[in-house]
Image (cartoon, rainbow, N blue to C red; front, side, top):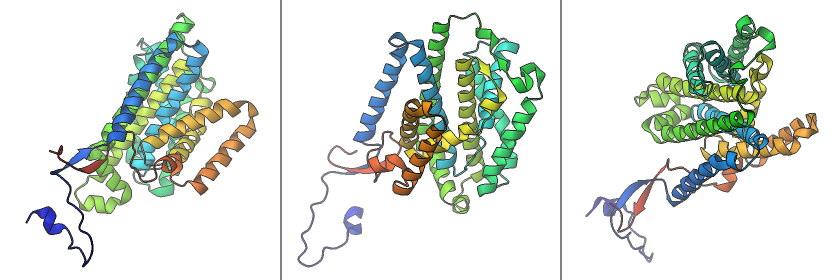
Length: 354
């Protein structure tokens, strides 16, 4: 008798016996839906890469902002949705990335576009000592602590005259560059960063570290008792999220050609992240992407309404939380059978299984 036959319960009297699956079984990563999803997203990235040849610079600048939203939503979801660390201080790394790009390009002579990953690395390195303090806090104390850190970073930056102090500074290294060429290269850089962030997040979630991360989020003590290095896993995600926020800040500096502390260190950036992830679906890979699309569409459609625009965003957030607590992606795929990325395992029966 095989293991499969031994574990199958005996049928009740008169109950029809189901035919056993034909052939052996195997464990597969992803599904047909994830294959289609990744193919469509890959094709979409190729189409987006061609847009500078088809659209105006104004459209490219607008889409650059959308790609920044994608980066922020995906990385904040990685931190809060998978790591269980709700931070309201990610604007600290947005500001550090923006100012880091200015310092690297204007003062150190690094090419502004090559300075984007370096600014992200700078934000990641500075987040390590912050994690030593933040990880001593839990729950709401952690959230408020990250906000305090962001305010401290802002207050330190406005004391530095080399970067304009409280009035900010301009990105001088691109002053003589053709505007259309600069906007196109900024857009391509933003697209590359977004693709790398999404692909890196998918890889991380699908890896052993991602499994450990989910265990830590659900129950840190149970995860630790099963051999998971809780602090190492949390710090990895904390640093990765800071790097993503730093890259987003660098892209904002490239796009706007000016960095002001009250803008890049504004808590509204974290509010935008929370909104996108909550309405899209916390703890999913597809939710932040959908949330970024919805938020961007609402912003473009309602941006001229002034304060009423913020009221509408608040109403949308409340309605989604009340009637779709798992986000819009939870309505699209309530049983998580049609994920766009191959991150889950499933048991496949059939003659083709090996």
